[in-house]
Length: 72
Image 1 (cartoon, rainbow, N blue to C red):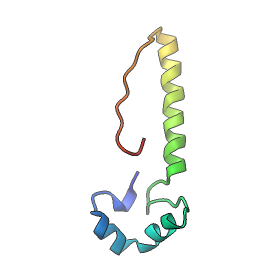
Image 2: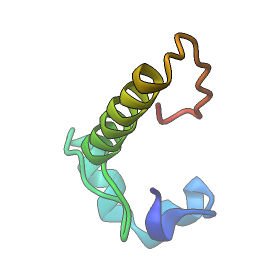
Image 3: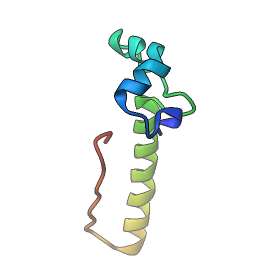
Image 4: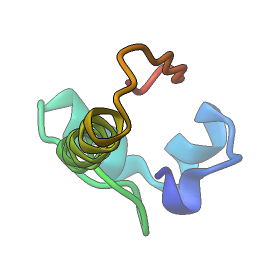
């Protein structure tokens, strides 16, 4: 979740949220304003995969395709 940065170009995001980019350069996993950080996205992904696994097992489905974007 990119929060307030969603839809902005990188140039505009850097101008509006310079501390976000400064923190990333220091290796700090900060959240997007009103959004998520990498760790939160990873935890949301794990939750989804656990739920999916349970559903697939209960339904006796043994194949699934998952399509994601760059963040995953």
